[in-house]
Length: 211
Image 1 (cartoon, rainbow, N blue to C red):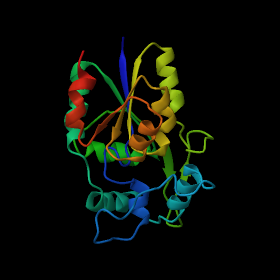
Image 2 (image 1 turned 30 degrees about the vertical axis):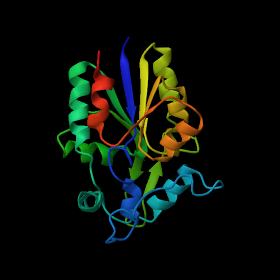
Image 3 (image 1 turned 90 degrees about the horizontal axis):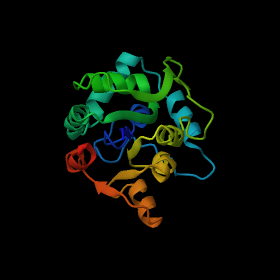
C-alpha cells in the first residue's frame, strides 16, 4: 500500500504562522508574536482571519521574504525528515492554509526542493495583500478532502499538524501525529483518537518511513 503524509506548515514545520509574522511588528519576545489563532472566536473563521491579516501586509514579496528569514524559526529536523520520506518512497505533501509560493520559496532556500505544497495564492500589493483561496471552506483550503481522496485511492494516510485547521483531516486519517501540547494534540486526546505527540520530526521519522 502506498503511503502519503500530509504535513501542515505554520506552527508545525515553523514555530509560528507566516502571515501573522509579517503582520506583527517586531518584538523582543520571540515566543509571543505572530501566530494565527483560528480558535480565537467562534464567529471568525480562519479564512476571514487570514484575509484580515493579509490586508494589513503592505510589503513586496521580496521584502516579506527578508522579514521571514529574520523572524521565522524553521525546524531543522524537517529537512532530514523530508529526505527520509523520499528515500523510503513515502509521498510527502505540505498541506496548508498559508501562501504556497512563499512556503515553496522558503523551503527551497533550505535545500528542500520540489516538495509539493498545496496552499493558497497571494496577490502582493502595497495597499494590502489579497488571498486567492483554493476553495470556499471556512479554512480557505479544507484539508480533509485530500485525505479522503487518498484513502479512496487505497493509500495509507498520515496527518501531521498542530492546530484547528488540522482537526478534520486528522479525524479521517489512518494515523495522526501532533505537535506536543498543541491544540491538535489536546483535541485528539479529548476525543480518544490514537496519535503520537512529538517535538521534533526526528522522533517520528523512523515510524513513518518504516516499510
